[in-house]
Length: 272
Image (cartoon, rainbow, N blue to C red):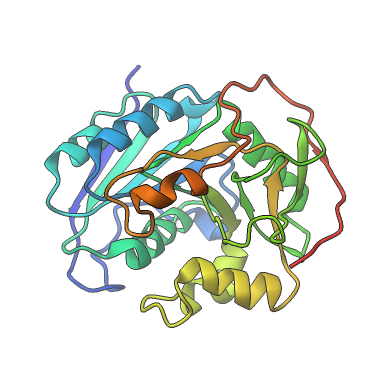
């Protein structure tokens, strides 16, 4: 059967003010176990088509709810989101360009209306076929760990631990935040992420604010796979990646085809 699709149309023109959500909140703050993936979409439909094909191949995707936040002005990208037939979707067209700082906030906020754990995906990041299994394991493993802020799928250089290994991200080898196809819990969103979001580059961007304020600043952890489960494919048209920078930013250890794994913690010595 074709999954249900809902379309939110145009929201009110303000960075945070929104039309009443068409998403039905989880009752009483209860846990929603189905995967919820919030997507930011701008104006690069060729990359988006590639990314959506990678998500189509993900094991368990039929049970997921994909929530798209689309910038206005690119009908082709919106049409691609509306044409998704492998999972339930909600498509919202923003009234203005919220940009790389504002749109992720809205996408996550939509996601946390219906789930206590939300994955944030982007139009230029492809994923491995086990990415939902990886997130499900991490969600259960670290839900009650006050040291773990978030889960990322990115790893720049291969780490000891193999395909099944999960570890605190090391920033001595790759100092950039790399919140690339990442997830966090509603408690962290409501406690501090939502209301301290960087909309203005005062902290160099929301990802740097999370890295410097909560990981380096307060000793929290960003958990990551030992081999990357996402890969950057946006050579052209990105806000923070020029064609010259593209190759240096791509993961050196991305694995697209991954059989089911028995994931396990890999202890490492953390270094900033």
